[in-house]
Structures are given as C-alpha cells and as structure tokens.
Image 1 (cartoon, rainbow, N blue to C red):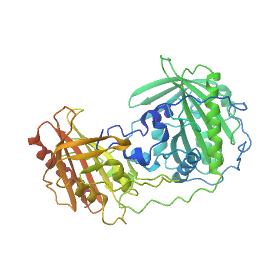
Image 2 (tube, helix red, strand yellow):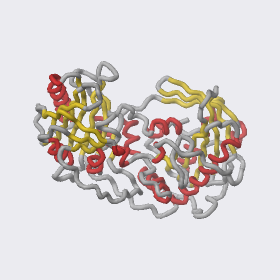
Image 3 (cartoon, helix red, strand yellow):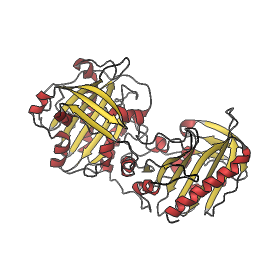
Length: 486
C-alpha cells in the first residue's frame, strides 16, 4: 500500500516541478535507484517457514551479527541503505534524503492520509503511511529503493526499503507491538487506505516469514476488488534490536502465497544484508554545513505566501543538496561549462551542501504556472558563487544551449536580456523561444542576496509581454528576500 504509492511518487509531495528548468534536482544527487522502469521479477523460493511473527534468534546466515543496542539517526539509517547499495555497485544513492521528506510533513504540504483495517486491531501488521512516518519525530527513519542484486530496477523488481530506529522498547512497541495470538486472528483481513479523500481497498493475507531478527511477519496485499492488470505487493517486516526493517515489492498476478515466494526470497536476502550492514562500523556521518535556513525553515518561509497577482505559492519540500550518507559519487571529469550554456546537472552539483527547494506559483489554469527554485547556501560559502557564475554565462548571449538532467539538450533561440527591476548582489533575466512549434516566449530570471538565491521560469504568448513577466518575478523575489530578512 504505502510502498506502492512511494514507488509511484518517488517523493510524495513534489509533483508540480518544472518539466525543463528545475527538472528534479534530486534525480542526480539523491535519486532512489528504484525509479526507473524495466527489469524482471526476482526468482527463487524462501528458505524456512516459521510461524507468522514468531520470535527467532539473532540474524542467521553469513555475516550474522548481534542485534544493535543503540538507536540509529536518520543519517546513519541512510548510510546503512547506501552501504548495501554500494556493495551492489549501484551508481546512485539508494536512500532518499530524510530531511527532504520531513520538511514536507513539517510544512503541512503532504495530503491527509488514513489507514484502517477490518478487524481494526489487524492494523498492527501494516506499515505506517509515509506521511505519518515523516512527521514522527520520536522515531528516526530512512527510506529508499533497491533493485535485486545484479538486476535492473522495475515495478516488479524494485524493493522499497524503510528503516526505523529508536530505543529498543520504543521501536518494538511502535512496529511490532502485537500479542502472539493476534497473528492467528489476522490471517486474512481487509485494508482501506484513504488519501486526499480517495479510498483504495485491499485484501491482506499474512504469510510465513523467513527466520530473521527477533520478531518478523510477512504479508501479501491485492486490490479488492481486483481489476485487470492490478499489481499486488508482498511485504516483509523484521525487528532486530533497535532496528526495524520494512521491505515491500510489487508482484504481478499475485493470487496465492506461492506467487509471493520469489518476492519473499529476494527480500529475505536484502534484509540480511541490511542487518549485517547495521552491525558494521558505519562511516562517520558528518553534520550538514551550517546554514541560516534548515529544510523545514525554508519550507516555512513560503507558507501562506502569494504571488504578485495573489496566486497561491507552493514549496512542498526542501533538501540538503548532496545529503547521501554512506554514498561517495565517482570523480567527475566534466570540464567547466562554456559561455552561453545553461547546464542544470552541473549547476546542481555545484550546490552541494546548500538547502534547496523547488516550488510553483499556480495561475488561473493548470497550464498557467511559474516554477521556481530557491537555494540557501551554507554560511561558509564564499565567492565565486554558483549563481553568479550562471548569471555571467548568460550575458550577451543571443542563443543558449540548455542541458538537462539525464543528458537531454535543446537550444534557446532569439535570446534577449530583460531588465531586472530589483536591487541584488547578482541577477539575470532573459527571454527566449524554443523550437517546439508553440510560438511561446519563455522568461527565466534569478536574483541573489547574500547566501539566498531564487530562480524562476514562466512563459507568455507574446514577446511584448516578457518584460512584464520579468517585473512580476522580480516583485516575487523581493517579497521572498523581505520575508527572509535579506
């Protein structure tokens, strides 16, 4: 349930981001490995079938370690996920940035969600919905995605991972606080998940879980009623000392426990790897660089704000750029960008350590919107600033080559400079067209004061209206700077 939604969203409250200008900053630096299509369903059969939820000795198999006795922080849990990703030679971080997810909950931008089961006490076997998990400050967490060892990611081969940690008694009560007799009473039950007023219903069946950790249970879940092409999901949850592991995997044509066995086998292997990684000496997780704004504070800066024409402004989440504990990217041999280029990927990499958020100003219609990105650089940042270099690259250009995340590239034509009607330490404003046949004019502008910069992208039908668009964006930038005390 929750895992399917996470896989679908790959970061819940951030659907309205720019299709070109902002792309997805996290796609390069923080992408979960499971967000790409393709791949195959893992094969095999589970080893061992103890009673549902039965206690078992410490982790079995190669690399078995004693259960952890101290709680892990959010960053340490992410390092555990990324450590397993490294052992599987994943090219990108397997864990998402927990600060980004928590900022969405703190900012109130996540939808209202509710999980109910029939019978009601069977809810003890289901994971929390992601929005409740992100808002829970008493239990640390990290989440991500992992393809099978040596395999490709896909809807039926990407295992969604959630690690939670707290003092042993607290995590045991939160995630495994059910009496043994509840297992027999909840062999099969119904589940209703409501999000933003829409309810989805499922049939859930508990399965025999492999002998992992100190307590464990497994389940399969299918839509009710089941429609053609509907995927089911299989889940495995394990308690190991202060560590709670929840794994879920989508399965096509899921009808019986035997259909779930390959998924359980794959998750059994991953759970063993995660628990073994938690027993190792984790890499030292350095605290994020000092910043005048945390991700929560950056989101709060825009709460209740309106655009120049009274339009609603939304900044759903913010993140610490490059916050991937336990993951070290390979050295880049990319040369500096030449003048008259607008390279989103290299710009994102230059912002490592900054707090960044992507948002939107919604106009009267769905296609009438402005995308923006705000960046709060670390307090220790010093010239030359990335924003200033980007601004300088656009000066005097009559054409610009834009490069996006993933290698996409296209030219801007008829580029002209616009007036930036806002005092700032650095700024730019340009108008241009794309060879997309629409005839639209695009306006991009940005400004920096101190360590805070804002950039935005909008569009209009006529070139004569581009300066007015730039003036409206300048007014928005000024309002943000004023709120931030810049």
